[in-house]
Structure formats: C-alpha cells, structure tokens
Image (cartoon, rainbow, N blue to C red; front, side, top):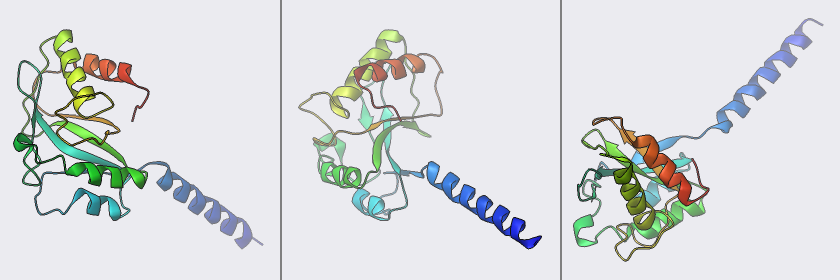
Length: 172
C-alpha cells in the first residue's frame, strides 16, 4: 500500500517537469558562423522556439547601421535579401525570428531620447512591420528585437524599447 502513494507522487512530479520544460522555449543566435548552415536548416531541426539573427553591430549615436552576418551574406550589396525566404520558412514552423542588436563586438550607445526614436524608426521600417525600399533582409517581417548590449552606456535603451513597443502589439 505504501508504494502506491509514492508512484502517484512520482507520476505527478514527472508530469510537472514535462509541463514546465514545455512552458519555455530554447533560443539560438544564428549568423556569426559561416559554417553553421542556413537559417532554414537551423529552424528545421525543431530544436528552437526563437532564432535571433545576429547581429546589427552598429547603430545609434550618428552611426550608419551595419548588419554583420559573418559570411552568410553581404548586406552592403543587398546580398542578404535572400534570407527572406528562410525567415518565412522559420515563421511557418511557429518559430519567432528576431534581430539581435549589439553582440560582443558592438560598441553602441544611444545619445538621447531622440536618437532612440530614430533607431526605433529605422528598425521598424527596415526589419519589422514598417515600409522601406532598403530592407536588408528582404520583405520578411521579423517578430521582434533582441537587445544584446554588452558594451557602451546603459542610457536610453528603455526609451528605444518603449518606442519599438509603440509601433505594434508584438512583445517577446
């Protein structure tokens, strides 16, 4: 008789662990290793709920925005627009695709609330739901922005997040 409560307790514990492990999602940074395979292949593994395209390494404080995808494509010659189909393939599998700002080599700062708004406008129009003829990743609409700010000041990032949030209802 004493074994039955133990079995029930272990079953409940196992159920709680399974439910808890499915509640979150695994994220991966893609784009900093030219040998890591395509974005579509990464998503096709079924391992990830979020893919952060890494990185927009330069932006804000008067800098020309610069995307660095480590050999996957050349954004300076519009060579990354082909990623649009990979992004859409990921999204069709219910994987959220975000653009990651900064990274370990990014030395970015925002000089003011106005600068934060300008960066938000750029991100919205070039990567999210806005309109621009110069969208670096083609016509795919990303699901959000990941802040991977490792250097620089900590000022005005909250204003950037609020400005981005003001454009739409997607928050991840």
